[in-house]
Amino acid sequence: MTVTPANQDLTEFTARLQRHSPLFVLTGAGVSTASGIPDYRDAEGHWKHRRPVQYADFVRSPSVRRRYWARSMMGWPRVANSVPNAAHQALNRLQQSGFVTRLVTQNVDGLHQKAGSSKVIDLHGRLDTVVCLGCGNRQARTILQERLQAANPRYRHLSYTAAPDGDADLQPAELDRFQVPDCEYCDGLLKPDVVFFGENVPRPRVEQSLTALDRSAAVLVVGSSLMVYSGYRFCVAANAQGKPVFSVSLGRTRADEALAASLNMDCGAALTGIADRICD
Image (cartoon, rainbow, N blue to C red; front, side, top):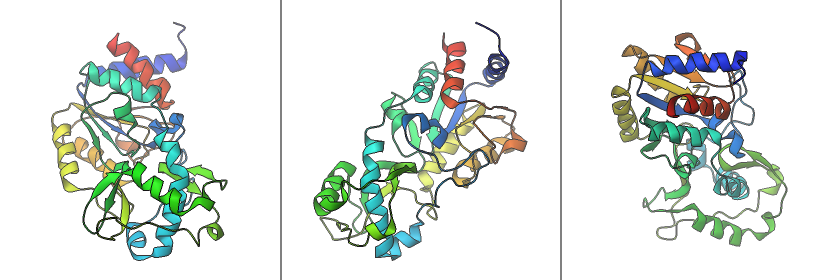
């Protein structure tokens, strides 16, 4: 293999990781961009799209719910049809080898599981499930997608721009007449089974993640700016325990000053290189 600065950095980074196994891995939106799912922030951690819907606004406002579900109806197929990329495949290899103890993801696309990874903690939930805020019934998103399309046939062929987490950018004027189905059992409000901004991560998921961190020697953050505290908390906890935190990301992170080492590379290329060096 030709020794380039990138290869040299990757080799040194991998060697440092290997001195601190097993790993607790936290993944963010940057892991799924190569699967066609846009991320939220740029290399400096600034928003690339409009700010996501707040939980309080979703619950309080029928117009916010119309806008959310109209955009989601358009954007959901992109997530549903997405396939794992090299980053997901490499993390599965690392987990199968025993080098990674637990995968905790901030993503809601289910791509780690599609790649074969097990024991994944979906910190922010999953888009492929819908929950009723009234009776608590859960159902597959595919069922609601059929209801949304049946109630809104004129919207199915509108043009749109893809946005993060199955969202889509549509003109507000196009959303006024969008019909949002209620729960079939209690007429309650339906919401994707994900943690919205302004909503707390369920405590059992946090505790399960912290337990996995306790059993790991270090943290590897992949594709996350860590601007959201729900993920950043694990870096804080690792530092409190004297465990090093490593990062693979294109751009800055909230934890830069506390990192043991970082690799400014594409997630897929970096993780494939790490897996090739550790698993082969």
